[in-house]
Image (tube, rainbow, N blue to C red; front, side, top):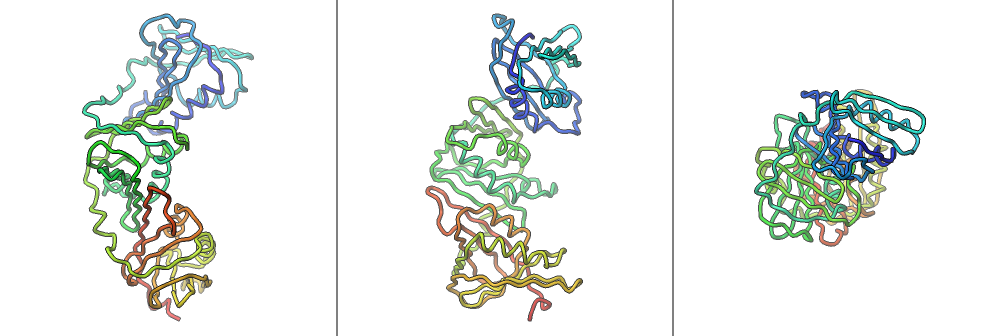
Length: 381
């Protein structure tokens, strides 16, 4: 393997892949990048056994006429640390198959690191019996952003630690829940091949959100019973799906919440951030007292005699109501809803509140649900 490459372009592609490499690997070879050179195309691979990602880039190969591909494993940490401290310049990289060493020549010096046999790197998952459809990159990244925060961290309930992709003839729905909150976003402008559902793990989705472009370029999504495959013209990612049945989420969404409250979302977030400072650190409880066209928002910590209260203007078509929510979870939810005006649908203080943007974007239906907290007598005036 003998090629010349821009140091900046190489670092950028390594960063696309490197986020998936774990610091505590079970298989030592996974601490490496896999470099595969075929003609003038360098493909860089990283894996943590459950997820594999590949990034391709063009280089100037000294042996571009050779048939077949050349493989070598390159230690990820030392190579990334070196490139981060190197000004933009051409690099000449040459490998020695007899001992798998890697020689790097820059404008100012020469370096040598030890690699490993690329043939021993784990193989890519086989893409068989696939269902495939296309989705704009911006739609997928938005769906991940608006759902991933609501996934569970409880490994005893693995199905809830990922995002559920539900596909049908009406489009695609992304759902996440941790048992306290639920997020559902439906896109009706995506043509799905078959009805069904898959659960994608949180870690590869987080990585996709970080590396995919926020534009209308098309991604190819494919899936079978065990794996999800995501591909564009530069990146290929595959990950093992979560094996399990997603909870019947529709059953927890109230069929009828007749009372609607409209409030300015940025104002509500600012208010919650201030009041939550005075709330109990154990329950994070924030109380909404809805009276006429105002919301009295309060939090208190009896152990330290802390208390905070603020009032916001709103529009409400129901009876006066007192309902409590976890302020920390609520702020996180509201930060993932767009627009200035927020709609909160309510029924009774013991039933979940449904949060939506007052105006939904075209072809989009976003719903966020938060279970209420029982408002104790200690909170009564």
